[in-house]
Image (cartoon, helix red, strand yellow):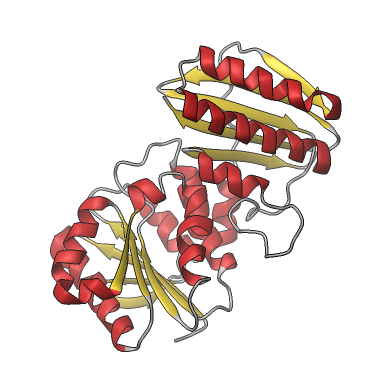
Length: 302
């Protein structure tokens, strides 16, 4: 195996899906490589049934749960599996399916691009299926840019369009402004007050108690990051929109690392875990980064 292999599997229908995934899994098992399959629930069942007794040797993960926030897939699924095993591993990861919303998709595309940097030089293979029948032309074009290799009924080929950096940059988009919402300005002296503000606004927006706690935790981590790593102050907004409660933290710091929050901090490192924790508790995290400003918007389903 090359140090890192990232393949986009282009398929139409269940037969092509299984033809592209099952031999890949069985080859890995034959080579003694740990194998994980992280795909949406229906496809999970298809693969498990097709593997028969060999399914007992594979770790199955429902991507609609574990990866509903695309920012959680790298730290919580792929790295969590790979970092706990020695030697080469292989993973089937399907983070993009027809049910993904338009607001989720930019984070999905960035995730696929960032895999190439997160695993560069590691003995690991990731196969990412794309359904030709249900995904739009733009999604399939992005797949060619985020995967150096493509596979399908016509065989394997290198992608002439491979350019993951451009995908990361293209989906670093300004976020739509909400209708009039209350804002709260904070600095070091007001970190406790900003948590109380977030809790009150989340409760008033109809979020359940457990999710209110998660939202307050996210605001606490993001506002602390703004104070410690930004210019010492920022703005928080919380509002409800289309079945979600959203919280947003805006500061004047520059977040230059697109993998921030998608890569766990090394053991023993002090700090660096706040954004990973935010990705863990939220249903979606979107960021807009530019010099002198970082906007982080976090979504919680009502």
